[in-house]
Image 1 (cartoon, rainbow, N blue to C red):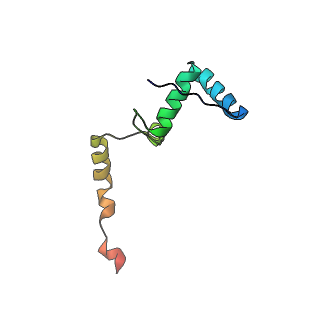
Image 2: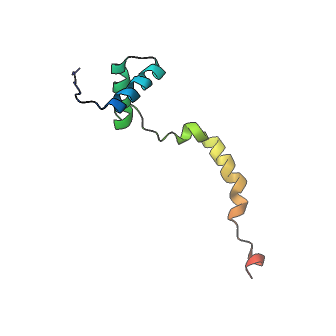
Image 3: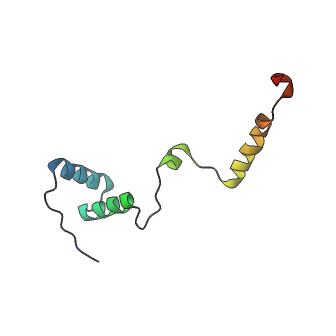
Length: 81
């Protein structure tokens, strides 16, 4: 593993990192490593977070939904005369 020194950290960034460290209940070093991994997509899968907010469907749920709305794809010729 490599060491990294970061100099001239702005006060507002330091405060944000300190707050995040406290929120996570972990060391400042681990917090910075986790944030860098997350932002750079290194060693973790990247996500925009929408799945967590909106939920996710498995294949069966998706298939059920597709079947439920299949009738809406049909064109009613009587309406288009």
